[in-house]
Image 1 (cartoon, one colour):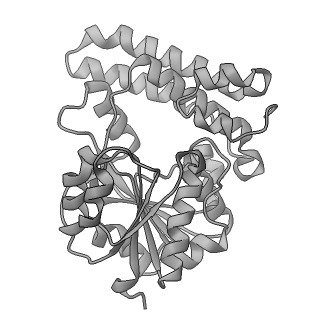
Image 2 (cartoon, rainbow, N blue to C red):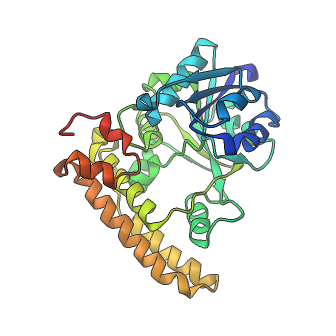
Length: 313
């Protein structure tokens, strides 16, 4: 039986002052009591002075030491030393829709139905129409579970998992080695692949709703998808055998229909340009080994990653 006193929320932060109120509401008003661990990458705004209103467990790291997987593993290690049974990972800019989000998120883990879960993400109220579509496309209204048997049917989509708001049983998390610490992004996807291949079930919990969205510019979309391509180039055997398939084309096709249904044919050129930017960046990222480090840093959203790599990576 899992003790509710052994549920820990881990939040990597950097200059999160603007999110303090939202984080407080998300964490402190939840109906399920948790302990919160903050891993802060040497913020230089006012967040460090206010973070104690959210957590008594704050660990500062140098920005040069940050990686998406490494910071989260560090928080998980701290939680382990305090007897954690369930690890919840959220980002600093997430906002819960209702106070039951933790209860709903961890329910399948508590019931022994899943080793890991992730929440539904809804667009913010001021999100663009294209970003609204992205949230609804990737996070449907119905919950669903995945096992290793779904990899052949779903391809790489079987590994879709988001650390914006997710939960993992602590012993299961460590049994697969936690997050990879050397990937540029998508450490959550690698964790999902490890979990499925180890025989665990992952459940998407639509009843656990949080608000989270980004209205990226074309340039930001390019840089993000360069990093996505880099990730897939470096993912290795953990994602092996899972076809990427036509998911990108399906996304664009459904996005075109979505903007037309909403009476915005003026957005059609933007959809096409954005799709072309994503595809081009992804293909460049997959071939990043052919590029010098200076170019990779220029093209990348997570440019610090390249300073952590050997010159010819």
